[in-house]
Image 1 (cartoon, rainbow, N blue to C red):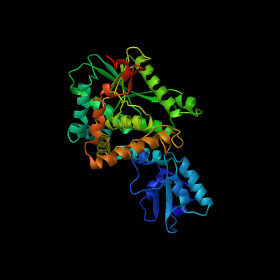
Image 2: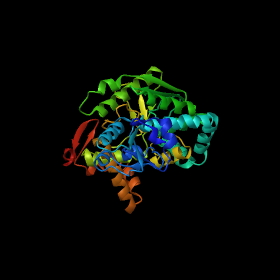
Image 3: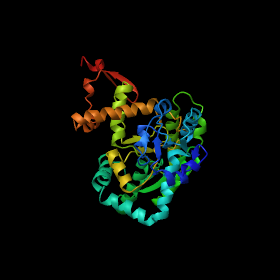
Image 4: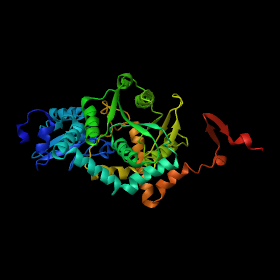
Length: 388
């Protein structure tokens, strides 16, 4: 069937019809971090450099390359074809188009009511201990929700934020604390596919999401130094501003336990500093506003298991520049986080308590053993009180 397709790009409908054929090989060139958020079944993994330098070349096979959005895969497929590999193709729209197809197809075959019921029951039963209980533990331990709070649940479009939204839905049903929520998502300049993915998932999970727009992507597009750092800071500011506009006093972000321990280790190994990611912060720029992290005690593997059990499909990042993004692809920041993940995994093989020890290190800081430390940005030395 693929022999009849003349174009380098293969649209998602044709792809779904031929991807399981014996003569078709799907090559996923996305990074390990991106693939951990989901991948195409039975695909093989080759990064761009290996693919260009040493491409598989079975004349009886047809190779379809998949990247995040279809841009890089198209360029590589074209380059390989120009070099004589006529049996190479690119998946148009990349992995994004695949996920969107699955979401829409699932909705056609399974009503929203059935899907929502399945997702809710999985939180109440199968994943109650690892998800709901740890969600409630974080809220209680760190006093994240107070009487009369109005919390903006910030949904980025990934698995973590959608789980957080579902956990808050459950909590609202029986909580003794009187609080309210708004489910919000910022569109900083998404491409059409990403916007639809967020909207389709919100509809399928019955989350009354409010999407507001900003021009952040346009602003950071030409930023050469740390564009993703600038993007993240601007996103945070826009979220605070919109949340305050709709009378919220808190924003909830979906950072989880693994984010916390990776941040601690990254700060030490790459930043030369000891710092953590707090479960609760007061805003310095928006008076009366707070940031909370209700997934603080939830493990990423448990979120992945919940996602896969319910056959849900999310994207890692909704950035429209993901093919060249400095945090979403194989560039410096993502490489550091991936390296830290590998370090933790290796250490865990010898010490099963390594993750909890890293986490607990932020609870047991022995300040009087440190050469210096900062409080509210002011540096103090151990010599200050040495003679007391």
